[in-house]
Length: 183
Ligand code: AP5
Image (tube, rainbow, N blue to C red; front, side, top):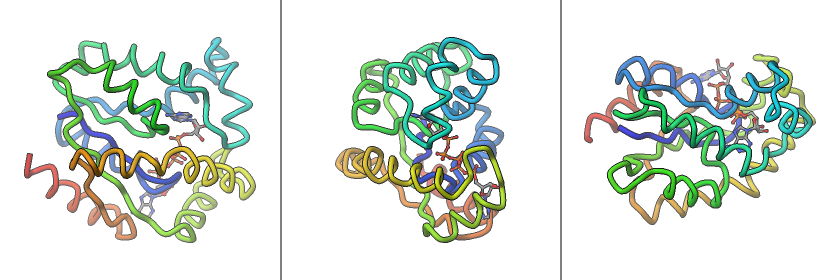
């Protein structure tokens, strides 16, 4: 299966992606993790991404698409994958369609819905470098301006499924499994 985990910063995409990846034995492709690794290794991509990530903005589509294209072409992605944090702009979604060929369509987009107040609490508790109030505010700004338009984009295709992310991790996971069991 080819799955997109979609939702605002800190809604639980990464947490649920790990569980789905284990259950379905398909790789978890997180652009956030890939970019953080690139920043740590001080690669060319990392140098381009560092300042933007530190401010909570979106890294350029070209940079993100280059890493996704390479990762999706990997042999372990042949029987499916879970995209976490990608696509994040309509342009990224359209380009993803071009990267995937006809037989490799996205099966479903799981949209995890969590109230903003709850997310802020979770992120402050987690304490990652970009989990500071000002940066969280910018991450939300980027999400609202650039990423939200993907909701109608995938709704029109009838592959968007809403998941209640306000529940505890196991209950969110059970709701996701129920949706996936229907494929
Ligand atoms: P990325 O790493 O993708 O950040 P994000 O979308 O803000 O998401 P997070 O990783 O913070 O949260 P999540 O939804 O995965 O939730 P998690 O499971 O961790 O991207 C980072 C940056 O990279 C971006 O800001 C951008 O600059 C750049 N970037 C990445 N992709 C890009 C792209 N495609 N284009 C351009 N730029 C890109 O959970 C959060 C916390 O909540 C954890 O502590 C977790 O334990 C807890 N938690 C999870 N579920 C629950 C629950 N049900 N109940 C209680 N606590 C929970």
